[in-house]
Image (cartoon, rainbow, N blue to C red; front, side):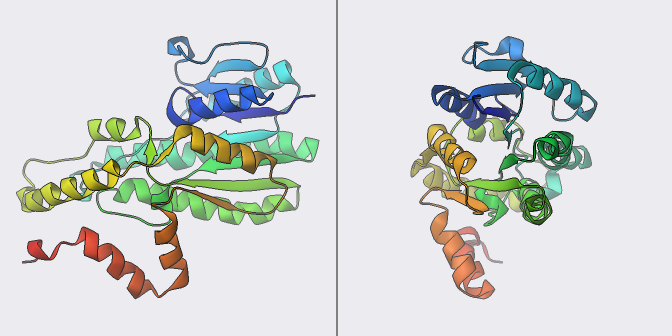
Length: 278
């Protein structure tokens, strides 16, 4: 029997690329998204099943999971990919924006994981793979809420990995650096700003220049991430974290290999410009 992967947030970007990649490798793919009727890349086929799933509505999860199992017999891998980035000034970010960021990125991910655990325990195997972010380990300005949700995911799944090892269920974390998807454009569309917060104007202009330089340096592709996810799905080791991107690994090495002060100084040199000091 072919193995089956269950993907959240498969409508575009990494989720969509991963669905395509696993299908070409002979896997069954359950590609879930909020609006499957709008999907024009992924198609229902012998090995591909598109299902409606909104990560903010856990009351629907069991029905979706049961439909997937009826079709393919079992689920071997859960890929927690659904999420988005609430970027912007923390002071300009509303309570509603903060709550929704955690509702989608953290609480929804927890609930779909919880919903699949009884099936993984019953079949005495399973693999939970979660997309976090480089800013779940090494953060930067203007992503405080997004980074908080990703730091939370990192801690949650690291802890969960110990519990689930007793049930022969693996936990894997994928940490992408700069990825060439539509994520940046989507993020800009809901960037938190407040025209009354003029004290930040010079800093925002400076950071816009800094981030343009970072993004112009290129990065990995969604297919690169999909290939790493495939390796994690087939990796029998107990490796927890998979870092993607030459931009991210050196910063993680600095954080892991030196003092906290030296790590913070490296980031301050980029993100706390001396010419903006009062």
